[in-house]
Amino acid sequence: MDFENANKVPRLRLGFRFQWEPAQNAHVLLYPEGMVRLNESAGAVLSEVDGQRSVADIVATLEKQFPEAGPLMTDVWDFLEDAEQKSWIEFR
Image 1 (tube, rainbow, N blue to C red):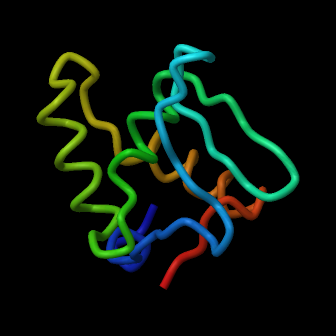
Image 2: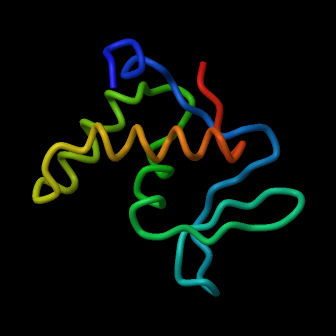
């Protein structure tokens, strides 16, 4: 991952909403056609996506929350790229 990508700012796409769903006991991503149940890691990353903070800022926050996980930039970027391909998020 290059420095330029670290400065990108992800945000949820229009029509998508991230929330905790007690019935699923998990974070979910809601959209008009349905719902995606997220695993713990995906929920942790998307909980930091606010349309204001860069990928680097999100990674720094997650590394403070989960210091035992080690460097997270590659994993977070890979997830965000996948989420973009699935049209869950977009970058600005």
